[in-house]
Amino acid sequence: MELNIAENLQSVRMIIAESERKSGRPAGSVELVAVSKTHPPEIIRQAVEAGQWLFGENRVQEAKAKISELPARVRWHLIGHLQSNKTRPALSIFEMIQGVDSIEMVDEIQRIGGDLGLFPRVLLQVNVAGESSKFGFAPQRLLWDFERISRAERLQVEGLMTIPPLASSPENSRRYFAQLRELRDRLEKEFRFSLPQLSMGMSSDYRIAIEEGATLVRVGTAIFGERSAR
Image 1 (cartoon, rainbow, N blue to C red):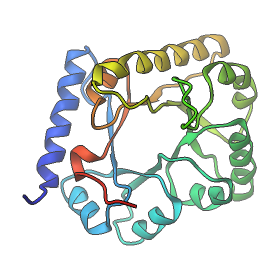
Image 2 (tube, one colour):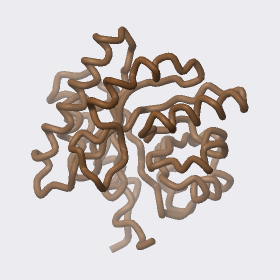
Image 3 (cartoon, rainbow, N blue to C red):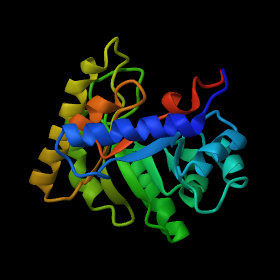
Image 4 (tube, helix red, strand yellow):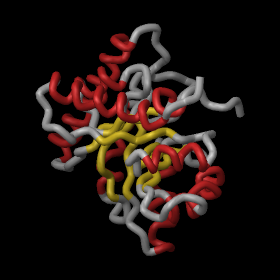
């Protein structure tokens, strides 16, 4: 059966709107990041034609090749781990770096942002579940490091991001989303620092993420189908 990206997008948007209503949040308070990694420009163009303008990629070189083939007004977030040797090109092409996962990466973005005359928008990735296979600040580590992060004048730190463990049921992700929100609230209170963005929730659990406060949801499979093997 042929994939209908426009219909898939409409379905995802309806679920987002329903979840906003269910959780008593204003309409439009959650933004959809269509995860386009591994999908070619012609597939992404179908989503653009259906009114989707924000996309998430996890490889700098792959994204760079696509960006040149798509309309200039398309917006791009880096949602994967950023290798230090890719920081300079990443800051030039992405509107936001969602996966800033260490104090070393904070320092690198601060340095290169200064070189390029940029003030990069970033989210801090938190490894809420403490999985050894995932990147991200441990919650306690972020509490220790946050004062230093908050003084990085080149970074526009807008919030937090997490990827919960794989789960058999979306409901199993709820506690990790709640923990990220609670950590954000604690950081805001202790450091008097605004962190409005929470990027959490993917195709399998974005309803739950919205109920727990997500402002950005990263949805790929529900829009584009299964990714190509890489």
